[in-house]
Amino acid sequence: MQNHKSGYQALRSGELVRPFLKWAGGKYRLIDRISDNLPSGKRLIEPFIGSGSVFLNTRYDNYLLADINPDLIFLYQTLKDEGRSFIDYCESFFQPELNNAARYYQFREEFNELMPGTRKAALFLYFNRHGYNGLCRYNLKGGFNVPFGKYKKPYFPRLEMEHFWKKAQRATFVCQDFEKVMQRARKDHVVYCDPPYVPISPTAYFTSYAKHGFSLHDQERLAFQAKKLSQRQVTVVISNHENEVTRAMYQGAKIVSFPVRRFISCNGSRRNNADELLAIFTKSL
Image (cartoon, rainbow, N blue to C red; front, side, top):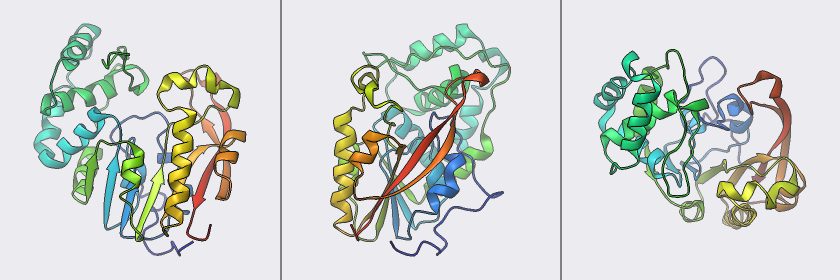
């Protein structure tokens, strides 16, 4: 692996930049572990950007950031293009009179009929902070369907949005399948993948997991692309649960494993530890 002690690693503790979105499986608490395994390069490619914690806390010349969710990517692109005027507009939705179930569901119905635009992007942020547990979920028809969260005073992330906006000037955002995004990698690029995780129990594959839209076949496609890129001297790092499935799929990669406390519920009694891994595919494979 290339030497990564070159200023491309994450900002150290005390200097970390928080993402402005709540996001299930966000990597903010794991930045140091991830960055310690990211080599230097001209560009970081993230096919599954999520809340952008890795993007915000690494130092590369530029970034290619992708997700299959068009609402998420359009929010990021709008923030990049419109900056403070968009941030001010988003703040107008964080008023006490709009923090109730009636207005929330009115906005949700409107959102599902809107074409992409500034208002739809602002509403996506509103839902992220006012909806239940910060979830992002759609029904089978593609309609956003997260229920109202009943928060007393949702936090408006102005400072975090400003950090994101400034750094986004060095980023390109695309809404594409991860395979197409990874095919754009070149020898001086680094790829970090944070896909939807496999179930902790491998037997869950043929029950609940397939409903989430990222199948075992997709996991295998991702592993195949990682191996293929490593043969072209591109380092690929993948986060996932550690279990029999991932160990088999990532055979040949360097595996770094560690326990992570899982926040699987707003009920603190249901928060457990689970083993996680980083699979590191390099040109030496």
